[in-house]
Image 1 (spheres, rainbow, N blue to C red):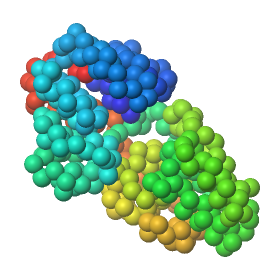
Image 2 (image 1 turned 45 degrees about the vertical axis):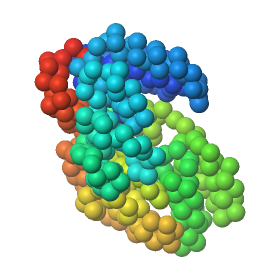
Image 3 (image 1 turned 90 degrees about the horizontal axis):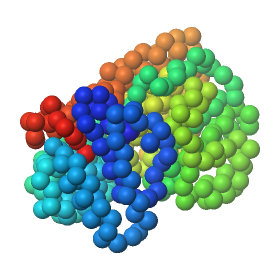
Image 4 (image 1 turned 30 degrees about the horizontal axis):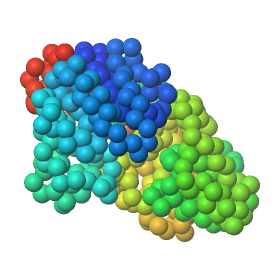
Length: 342
C-alpha cells in the first residue's frame, strides 16, 4: 500500500521511500512506478547500531525533503535533527506508542477506530483520519456465484491471538456438521508464528481435509486468486482497519468480519458486508451458512458488484494519496509544487 501511495504521489512530486530495515518485501521495488525512489539501509533485525540511524540522517540531509512522513512513532527521537515538518501514520490499535506522539506536526490514523484510541490515550494529540486505499484497477472481479463446495478465504498473517484464524477453523467444523463434509473449505493465505498451532487445531477439529495453509503470497497472487473464492472472512479479535476486506469487496466477494470497530467501519456498519459477534465461532458459522444460501439467489451477483462500486468511491488509492498531499501542503506550502516528500 505504501508503494501504491508513493507511486501515485510521484506522478507530480519527487517521492522517496527509505526502508531502514534489511528485510523488505521484494515486490515493493518491483511494483512501484519508476518515478518513486527507493533507498534501503540494511539494518539487521533488532540491531541497535547507531550507524543505521546516521545513514538515515545522511540520506535525509541529502534529499532535503519538504515533508518527512514516518510510519513508526519512535522516529520522533530524531526530530531535533530534521528541519522539515514530520507526519506520522498509525496503522493499528493497541500499539505500544511513546509519549512523543504529540511532537509530530501531524498524526494520521487509518480509521476512526485508531483515531478514537489515540485520543483516549493522548488527549493532547490532534489526529485525523486518512483511510488506506487500494488500486482498484489491479483487482479482478468475480464472475460466477453459487458454487459448490463453497470456498472461503482468509488473508492475513497467521497470528490467531490477533487475527482470529482459530475461530474460523472452529466455525468450519460447525458448518460441515450442518451442511455436510463436502459443503465448504477454507484457504488461509499468509505466514506467521501460529501456523503449527492452526494446523494442529484443524486436525483436532477434523477439518484438515478442508483446510489449506498456502503460506505468504505476493499481492498479485492474492488479486488473481480472490475471484476464485466465494467468501472472504476476517475474524480478527482486534483490527485497526483491514485492507484485505476492501480487496475482497473490490473483487466482488461477500465479506464477513468480526463486529469490532475497524472492520465494521470498512463495511459501513453492514452496507458493504456482513458481520458476526467477535469471539463467537457459533455465530460465525451461522453467518457462513446464511451466506451460502444467499450466494445462490439470482440477484446476488448484482448486489456484490454494486458494493464493489461503492467501495471504489471510498477506498481508491488515488484518494488516499491526494489526502496526504493535501496534508503535506498544509504543513509546508511549498510541498504543493515540491521537490520531494520522503
